[in-house]
Length: 457
Image (cartoon, rainbow, N blue to C red; front, side, top):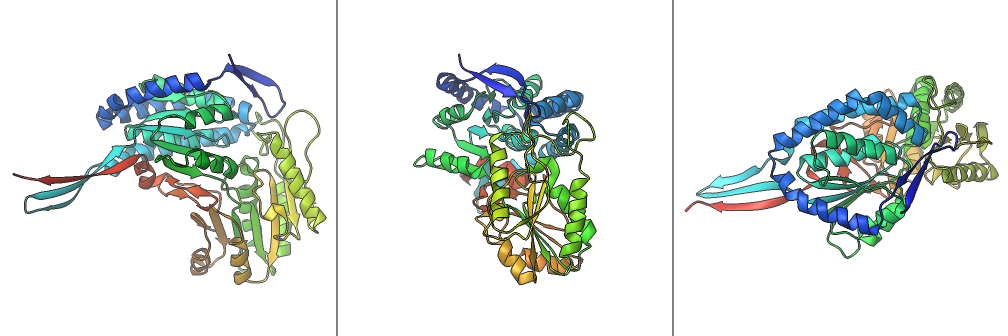
């Protein structure tokens, strides 16, 4: 029997070794889920919604235990784990409030004895390969609307957040979702590969661009719905009329929250030359005030880096930038000793010859570049293969709207950053992926429209 070992990234200690799935068990669970899905879809929507309401009650009841589990296996500071779970509740409420209308049959024509309707039928069997950085948000963005729409779900949480994935499955089981309808697969990349070989009706992946490309290649030639939520190199421009201190404090949080391990973290900042010096001073002050330490401490802001290999990426980006003329004004080093630790890092005098301004960092590293005007800022913001989020800080809303209209990004922000709303679609352009979650469109993503032509005799 194969096992999956789970370690605490803060100290390297083994938490547990779990029995893992293999190709045979993945195939068996897929067959059971396929057989169970029609009965689940046939239930009245209110029955499925009742299960999700009970799931929400379980999250509230067990919140502290769930936060502790997430912090131990990902290194996320405990207060941010609590924030994620508390932030999940309004997302659940949104799905409960909006699903009925989103998937209701629509009559689009009724005249002369002919009626035309659109039915939103469930896809059927959905594969969800999920991420570790926000396992409750990312997992439930797929699992909950998929279940509510009448699908069965094969859920493979990241091997770096498997215990959290099992907790999601436990609470759904306790809430009344049949185990064959909500199936959790335990393991690493080989289990994900086995899942992609199964007869499924949709594949929903959240993770790196490299893995997303491999999934797309694996599904090439198969007529399976594919949705990829991938990375970003999210830019923000600070105009000369912005308050440099307020913008710096907001963007420092946007760059360093969750130790910089968010797909929508601010990853590169462009500042008008007139306020560049004041902005950098305030930004460095904000970063240096962020407390680093044991993720289980309530006052810790910077936790451990979840994946040890990412330390090499961060170190390489810093070394590359300095070699090409960047100036290190804060951090820049990994910590020696147990666990995966990297100091919050700020680089200035950066440009687009440097990896730190072009390749996803996914850690507590940020480059700040001086620009002379709006045109240069927009050109640099669009000089990327990614297109997830982008932001502008200015006192002038019309200026912000005009600038953001020119930027290639799925979500844009004025005087804010690193924000996701269940009411708005979450999508990307370019190498940030295809498809979307959240909003009413994210609910409908788990259905296929079926056209009905109905003539009375």
